[in-house]
Length: 346
DNA sequence: AACACGGGGGA
DNA sequence: TCCCCAGTGTT
Image (cartoon, rainbow, N blue to C red; front, side):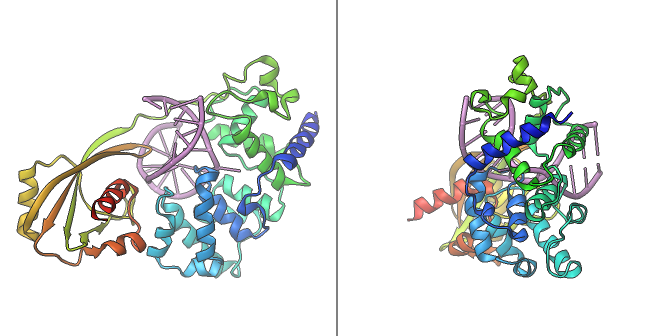
């Protein structure tokens, strides 16, 4: 059966009409396409655009990325989330410099060997930058597939992703794989949406969508629920003396590794306990209960109570406010406190 | 196969 | 609130 042939032509015609001129779509530069694809992992287009522009301006080539210092790299990623993506990017850039003549490899199989590049990303780069016919299966595509084919497999399962990859290998347009993949994703994000009612009335391929024909579009895809988040209480101690603030780098192997933060204790501390902890080291001048905020990660939730503490002495943990703003990559959980201090001291 | 890993937007 | 997002690597 070649019913997908007609569907593809409807899909590509629609994509040609509505296609947004995103910064990474106006180039064939594999480096830029790679950077965009890594940034777009689990991250919305609108969130990526400013980060992408800034990143490319600062690190326009593979070589520049391979040599960038970590602090600058993470600062460019600050607020984007999933920080190991930035680390993988630099590691992969080094691999490209060392073993691929300073360029990105141009096949799906080789791309897959780079750190941070999985099946989706390898297929996206191979198809968009190098015109290789491989399906890029992301959350959007899984949803579109499940509806078009009335497939009730659990799309959260790895096995389903591999199945859909094999199936779409037969459907991807060999003459225009890059546009085919982007059209599928665009359809998933703009029409065949996951959060809310799918817009079947404006769908270019509704006529060949089995779910639509059977009225099943609202009950597909099937997706198992995520595990519940655990909750933690944190005490944030903002130590300062004359515009110098205490920060430290989070240790390796934990959440938000490489990022900086104020003193962060993983349980509730009473004021007296805080005094016993801080006074011997730094000498407390004044201690003030500050604001509290909740920061939600994908698998854990921090309930944070902050204190601002003016101290007598400092050590090499203390940095200037300007350093915090311009140089050090700060953990996202600190953002609201930083903004509040900013407001208070201005 | 399950889990860790961010942050924000929409309903 | 809950769900989702141009997912990947580790255990």
